[in-house]
Image 1 (cartoon, helix red, strand yellow):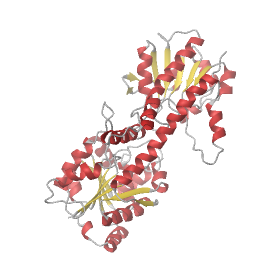
Image 2 (cartoon, one colour; image 1 turned 30 degrees about the vertical axis):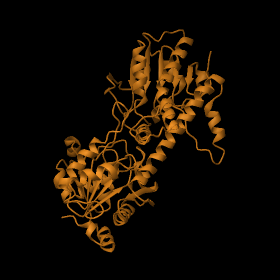
Image 3 (cartoon, one colour; image 1 turned 135 degrees about the horizontal axis):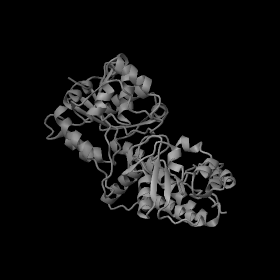
Length: 459
């Protein structure tokens, strides 16, 4: 029976030093599994609870699921082999036998761009039945400020007869701050935000996270402040990317190369460079902006800058298609019946994840114009993506194509020479939506190039 909250801090520190902490991570996906591995690697007995039976089987079979997340594989094999980590679909057993329960569940948006916290609410109802008194719940999922205090705790407490936050139930927020593709590095160097419902819970979580992750701990006054800090950092990026995207479209018309401008601006000590692109995707930035917008709406606040940023970034896939049409016109080629190669469908480089990827809107619009699509992504070979079958290789995608669009800046695409594209394609049109192609080389190779915020290279 979990009694960690009933112990004094010195006893808890001793438990941490000796590895006598029992941890349950609810949701062992992109962030949850690395979190579970890190806890197990710190000698804590760790169980991952997930409703995905296939994923649970993979983990227990010693098959590392996150092939695009380097650094954790050897650690994973060791903790599974040493039986410090296992996974289960039996949530009741996992939770009831744990001192610490970490929630790492998705918080997506619905079709109306309203945050969907149904996974957390559903698990919260289960925790009401499964948690033993004096356990500590840590919410790593990113939520709006106030959601934990106003909604989640109420669900977990139920009628309050058995569990009461701040008394025999510890609740803390420690929103994850790791970047997919470099989670191991971020776990070690990015400060962790910790806010809790009471001081003792905060101290417990700080001690555990400091031991497991080695990163600096930022102690914040409460859960809502911790969540506000996480959202502010990410929405800052969304807004600044929108600013650069808006300038990029202007600079195209002025004949100014935005990459040259940004390189110059980067020399100023207080300038933080953000880059233009085909759009902002993934489970974080777009969702985080709408989380803040939802909070503002509930409190009659408009957050005009955040809303404008979303509108600009959501327009960028359409702008990519505009560049495509313009370049094909220069080549005297109609979009209809043209074959367009899409390079990259992941929302970010070198990660296998298509959540809210701008590639989806680009593909839909091009198909709507009557063109044919070929897709190549090194993480999605011969797969069904966005209702299309992807190609096995880069060559299969570009050979005989009338246009190529670089949507995602995967490493493989950075190494592609413009001369190869010119040689393999039927019509030498390239849309570089990520600014990775050298414009001089493109000019010499004879490509008709368009790029977001780039000076157009016309014959």
